[in-house]
Length: 262
Ligand SMILES: C[S@@+](CC[C@H](N)C(=O)[O-])C[C@H]1O[C@@H](n2cnc3c(N)ncnc32)[C@H](O)[C@@H]1O
Image 1 (cartoon, rainbow, N blue to C red):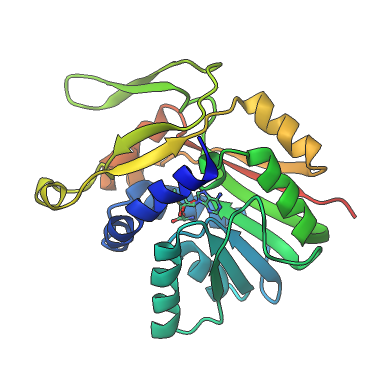
Image 2: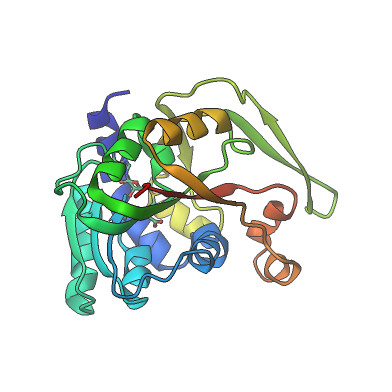
C-alpha cells in the first residue's frame, strides 16, 4: 500500500476519531495505554521533544504539561487542525505540523527525546521512521513508542469469553503473515449504537511485523533497547472498565524505549 493511501485513510478517519476520543470512547488509550506509557517515561521537564503521529494531540498535551517543549507531527492535516485548535484554546507552547514520519522536516540532532503513541505500527516503512527518528535525536536522546503488541495482535485475534462474558483466552493466528496495508474496519468498542448510526467506522491500514522484525529494525536504526513494557489492567481497572479486562489475559500493546548512543 502506498503512503498516499495510508494518509487518505487517516485523513478520512480524523474528524470522527477526534470527536470520539475527546468524548472518552478510546478506553484502551485513556485508561490503560497512555497512563502506562507516561509511568515509565524518564523525566522530560525542560527537554525538547517530538511526538510522531500525534493525532488530535491529547498525548502531546500531556507531555507539554510535564514540562517539555513539544513539537508534533501527523500525516493527516485534519488531525493537525484539531490539535492546533486545542493549542489556541489552551496554549501549551506546542508546535504542530502535517508531515510524514519517514521524512521528518527537522534538522539532525534537533530533539532530546521523541515519542510515538500507537502510530509506528500504522506506517508502511517502519524501518525508515526509526532511522528518521534516530537522525533528529541528539546523541544520548531517547525514543519511547507504543505499538499493537506484535505477538498478541497479529493477522488474526479473537478474545475467547466464558458464559458471563469474561475474557479467558486470546486466540491468535497468522503471526508470521506479513500484513502490508490490510484495511481493518472498526469502531472504538465503547462507542454506543446511536453514535455508530451517525458515523462511518474507521478504516485502519495494518502493517503487522513480528517481534523479531521490530528488534532487527531497531538495531538497523542504530538504537539500543532500554525497556519493553506490556500494559496489563489491574483488577480494579478491569472492574471499572471491563473493555480493557482482556489485557489481564494477554497484552494488547507493547511499549518500547530505545536510545541513540552517545
Ligand atoms: C492510532 S492513531 C494514534 C494517535 C495519537 N498518537 C494518540 O495516541 O491518540 C495513529 C496516528 O498515526 C498517524 N500516522 C499514520 N501514518 C503516519 C505517518 N507516515 N507519518 C505520521 N503520522 C502517521 C495517523 O494519522 C494517526 O493519527
